[in-house]
Length: 193
Image (cartoon, rainbow, N blue to C red; front, side, top):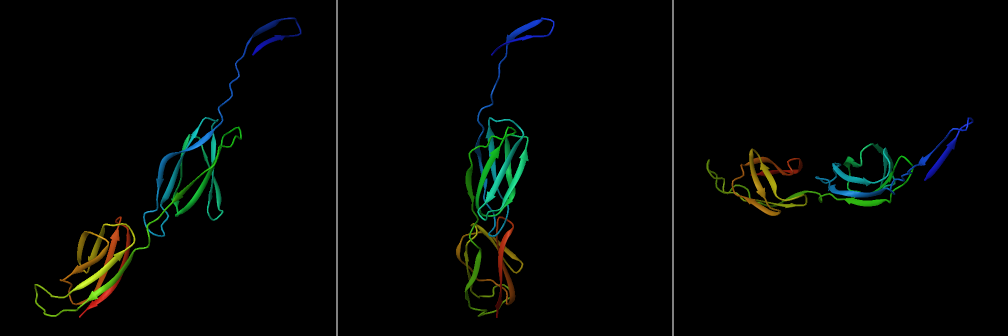
C-alpha cells in the first residue's frame, strides 16, 4: 500500500507498506496416537500440529463424557495429554488472533480385559521329586499376546492366547499370574492336590 504523511511544518514522507495477513490456521494430527496399554488404564495420548496462524496457541480438548480442558502452547505441535483413557477426543485449536482451527476427533482404544481361567486341574497322580505328573491347563484371553505366565516361582515367556498346559506344577496352593506389556496382569490362585 502506498502512503504519504505530512506534519504541521509541511514536511512530507511517502513510501509503500506491506501488510501481511497470517494464513488461516488449521490443525492436523502429527500421526501419533498412543493407545492405552492396559485395560482400564490411562496412558493414552494424541499429538496435534498447527499449520499457520499466530503463536501462542491454545488447544481445547473435549472427551466423550463432555469434560473440556484447554492447554496453552507456544509451539506449533502439542501432545494432548499423556494420561488419556480409552475414548473419543475432539481437539479445537485457537491462535493468538482468536482464529479457530477446524476440530478433529480421534479415538484411543484399549485392550480387552485380561482373563485367566482354569480349564483342567487333575492334581498329582504320582509324586516324585523330579516330576509331579499332574495336568494343569489354563485359558488366557484378552489383553495383548504374547504373555508371561508365572506359576509359583517359575515364569514361562511368550505364551500365546488360548489354552496353556503345564505338567509340573507343585502340589499345594499356587498363584498364577499372567502378564503382558511388563505391567498389565491378572492372577488366580489354584490348589493342586
